[in-house]
Length: 233
Image 1 (cartoon, rainbow, N blue to C red):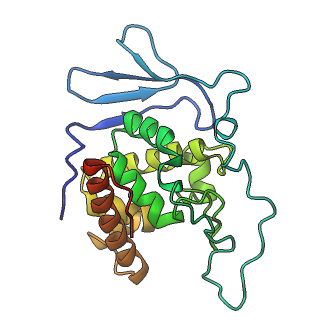
Image 2: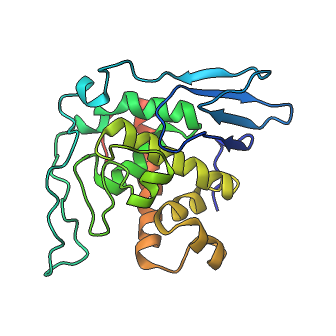
């Protein structure tokens, strides 16, 4: 198993409301545990990491190519019940860098490497924020409705909200599995309970294929980050 080098200490996520949009603060306690909150308590050396949007400032306004909604969602195709009901259609090579500012923000906030976030986005939606799966997973990081609620995502088709919610879930899984990259990926796909139940990657063909794909893309994005190229296969 590969261990993630980006987990030097545990992280504790503390949010006053899962649906609240507010500034996000961080402090490191005497044990080296990193705490996050949107409601900092007095007496701690909190550092603000993310500022609440100013009135009228939204990620979709900053990026006119990114849709705020996917429009009416069609029903699953009876001839292909496991196909995406809204498949990826964006083939532009610029899609791989279009959301970099949101990915960097999420990487800084949750201490997940940029190439790793990009690898998950590539495997989940191929960088098309309109994608909807047959299981109602939506957007760039394919968040299911329960995850939208748990991760405080109000507009799942907003690229920034989706990326922050998906990366927060990666952080949560990484904490559970002590930074093990393979198990973090498997838990993102199959859920942490399934990983615990089987004591490793669940014996699901789709999950095992997913883990292989994310690891492959992770390596490609790491190489891209090192040499400045944009070649993903």
